[in-house]
Image (cartoon, rainbow, N blue to C red):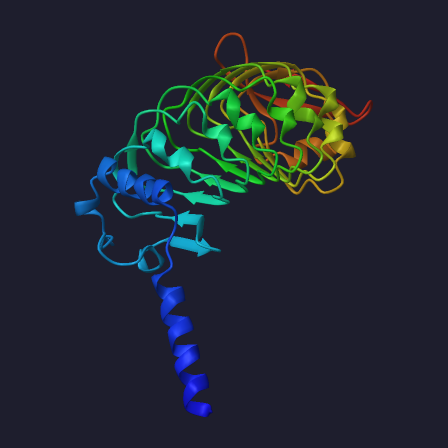
Length: 284
């Protein structure tokens, strides 16, 4: 009886090992391999082996749920076929040499929770369809050449905790909808070309712990509502064109103590008025 049980378990295990993903998902993975010069990857795939053995691929119920190929020398573009990985929850292509644009219909990946395409050579805009990823928690696109404005409906990402877009060429104003994301903990938009004011509605971001708008072209009053963010531990909004009044607490919280660029292109420090607890700009 034991021999029969052992044989059954062996056959069951073997069957599970042979079980594989659908043809469309396999084709999507192979297309990614071909489009990003798979033969030169640091850790290559053996296309003749079961997909469950491929580096960075995680399966669940014979569906690809995670694809982690960070720092693996991917060179090329993200193929449209990647949208066939409909169960994908995590896509991490950080620190490669991927060029081209983010697929415009990437929002079809409804199960996505973590999307990290940072430290590549991506260009073009952030697709509006990304706002359809209602389960998204982490969106990291920093250190690319992404341009255009932030999607107006970005506030639809109600579960977003990390938005890291620094060191790109993003222009325009921060969409009002962004301030509606109460779950966001890390907001890094520094070293872009953002303009306009920082809305007082930032007080809605009650989970915010780290805010960086450093090195943009934003202007207007520094919202005192920042003081209401009890969880805010790190902040750098310097090297913008903000003006007006600040409190001592905000000046201390900012990494560079509110060093701004005035309309003459000169760096000025907002000095706290200890009497009225406000600030004036010194251009000495």
